[in-house]
Amino acid sequence: METTILVVDGYETVRTALRKWLEIEFPTANVLEAVNGADAIKCIARQAPSMVIIDVLLPGSNGISATRKIREKLPLVPIVILSMYEDEEYRVDLTKAGANAFIPKRQMHTRLIPRISTMLDAVKV
Image (cartoon, rainbow, N blue to C red):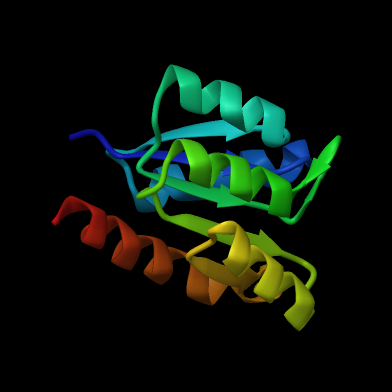
């Protein structure tokens, strides 16, 4: 089964940098990009990802409602929240919406790749 990672972030520079980093760390993975929740749902309709990485702040919606909609469509796919906002309120709301993990952007360089690896390994089992 091919690994596909969907990156959802409103900032093109962040999406592009994250996609390039993921392509280096997971060379056999197909990395897709979406700019907001609606775009993510369109991507999911075309190809179900193995994992979704989504920001809290998205243009036209927010990561909480987008996570909820993605979770409805993909009940078993891991969803990782990557955000500048670290408030406990966001973590609680995102967990209720169906997120599996919350990683602050300031910690992504040390925590993101190990977390993705663990989650993808669990999906393959």
